[in-house]
Length: 246
Image (cartoon, rainbow, N blue to C red; front, side, top):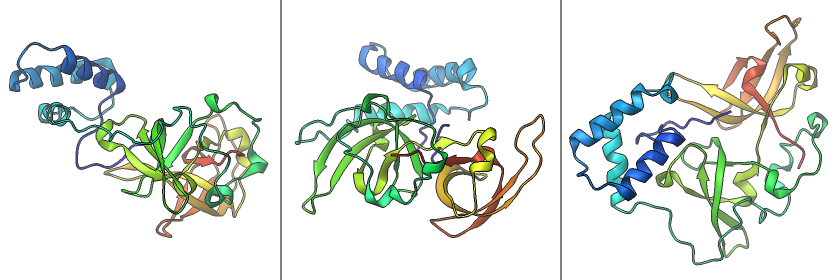
């Protein structure tokens, strides 16, 4: 499930659009002027890959190219580059162990190269899927920080995050057949959807109204309380993810 971050600078380009702009930036011999940006934005908006997504403005395309030409890229680490599969993350972090709902996990021990991770952004406290671990550094306290590339975002959104506090194995959407495994008191990752954004926050389940499932799936209502602001909300199962066993 994709994470969407509210932003002052547009970063909603698809992977295909970003790859095309990267290629044009490297190979283009034509001047990058207003006509070029408008034509590129028009092409993006007419493509099937942008169906259901926000319209791209030509000024947003221009901003992307301007940032790249100004050299806004991830900082180069002086330390050894981190393995891109996250294998430097040696086991579960103490801060996140309490978030694990092992009774729900159906998986088995995995190779690091097959595991997927999510990281908590310091900008809004929400969790986003990690595309790459770019490099890492050791703090005077002994903690590790990693520079992460969030999935679906460019280099301008890379962040240094604390491994112990803000990196964990990716949360897993709850299947309707697993509805009965969700109980009051469980810690979940909940999809919070608002007019201007839609992102994932940690929450506790504080109440459940069980209903018979039908052809549409689970009809139960879950009352949750978000950990970051104590706000309460009633949600459907499709908005909940559980924490896998480390």
